[in-house]
Image 1: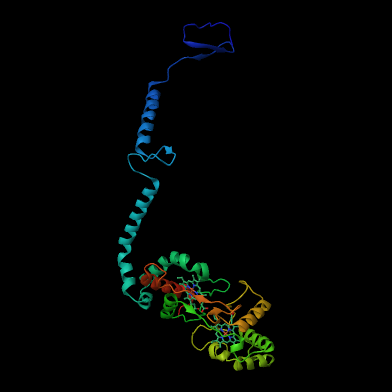
Image 2 (image 1 turned 30 degrees about the vertical axis):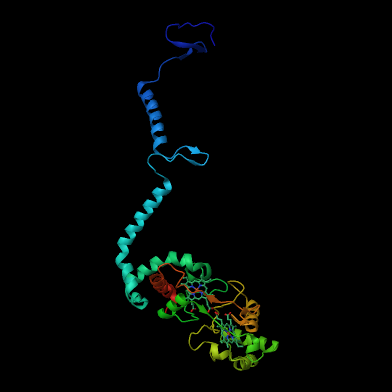
Length: 307
Ligand code: HEC
Ligand code: HEC
């Protein structure tokens, strides 16, 4: 810094570097000062108008009474009103037509499917998987293997009233011995591979008849009418330890099912080990249940396996 000021009259601050670099004392431009003061005024206006200052318990609410949450709710309500008005006639039709009639109408059918996806995600996917592809111990809805029937009315009834399958435990099926159970499990697995008539499984086949398995599962392992029993002639497993079980996994699983049955109760309590398979009833659980059950029934029907 220089020791004396060779430019005493130019209004510099006296700070001089490298011989001639000076700091001048000029006022900021007028436009800049105006903007500067305007921003102060804006702050005061803003602080009064909007919620601004945090307090010990709460915050200043502001003259406008505005909050981001309130604005969100108002906009959301507007969107809902708009949707309601736009789709009112379709919703009304869903209310007045039967699920079977909705299926006949391509436009309404597409609308039902589109508006079911969220509902299915919220109310069904936890058990049946996204898109109904199933979970271990919860049935696939996206195939044509039905426990309770794949006609639209049957699907609608499954959702409305729920379903509880029943299979007795060993003691109630002709007192099966351990050997009987292993033989019949092997026979049932053979059925799933199309080898039920193989003489090697004759013993198991005899148990299948003696244990009255055929009353529910049908004489050849395929139920004659849908009443909750599993189809044993395919490899769509109902009770499996994982999504890709080995044959040994399924042999164990079958032996377990045949030993303890499905939903077996003793003195009002579930028998320890019994398979639990319950589709909950949705008639009191869904909002706007009448319309939403029809909508979901159409959706499930169209997942791929409707009859
Ligand atoms: C808590 C688990 C759970 C939830 C949630 C659930 N389900 Fe189910 N659902 C089941 C079980 C378990 C079965 C099989 C019942 C049986 O084994 O007899 C089933 C069976 C069904 C069936 C009959 C399938 C067939 O093969 O005949 C339909 C249709 C169905 N569910 C639709 C739905 C729809 C639609 C929803 C949502 C509104 C839903 N489920 C929610 C557990 C559930
Ligand atoms: C009263 C009817 C009934 C009788 C009798 C019956 N079952 Fe079942 N069975 C069912 C039902 C219901 C299910 C469970 C279906 C479901 O909830 O998904 C089932 C499930 C099964 C399964 C599980 C299939 C899978 O994919 O995991 C096997 C295996 C089986 N039964 C074999 C037998 C054998 C063997 C017998 C005779 C010893 C027999 N059942 C007798 C109704 C019956």
